[in-house]
Image (cartoon, rainbow, N blue to C red; front, top):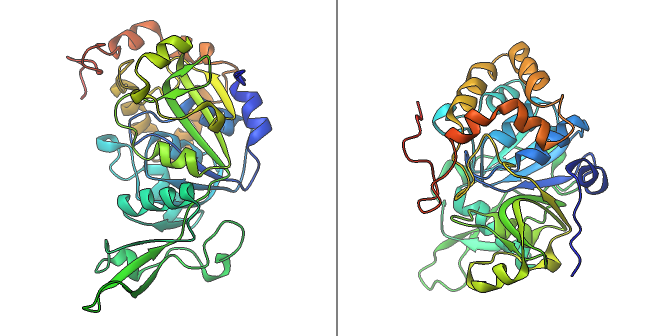
Length: 319
């Protein structure tokens, strides 16, 4: 297997088109695919249709930069730095994006259904909630492109003799999944360390998978613990070497989230003018990850360096 190693710029140009449905890996302040998200913004991709589990910094940047038309999600926020994402909330209130919300469990089931090629997936979860009563997408958008004709359906459970009901959910089959992993073997095998969230289901459901990674390692290393591997080489279309590629979010075993940067973003995200200054300072100028890391600075990167045994940075000032 020959790795299809690319730059972020080449991968975005080749694989991501305006209007694509994009799945983002990671979870709030963990393992967001930040390198490639910043490149999507620099290339000014538009009308993207985001399908995410519980997303944070990468979704915030894409929405704030005007790249997003539609979102299906369980949660959009930057953990304690913005329990509801500032750019997400502003775009929704100003009706610049359409939003459909599901539970965390629903989103994982939908990606799993897409990965398995199912026409739908059924669950009893959420029957008495507003999630099943309320829909966010406009009737005009239903059934067009990747938009499901129905958010969900409630139907009688054919296996319940007592007349119970189930929620029937549509599958998700993204055009592209963007994943950040710790390791990719030189045979193409991908390993995500720690919690995988919905990344594996997203990748298996997607037509195209782009993986950024901290390190490309020898095949012998990847094969030492095969039970720790996450995705086989034939599912991955492009690999982008990206040390600190999830910064300012965390990457288990390599680095913690960067509280100084996330607090900076918290201050700059709410208003359009200050958010534009953030993009001008932290997104648009960089032609490589090395340029971005030089801007972050070695002192701040060392502060978030993870303890290899614990997987995070003990003693980090998280205020």
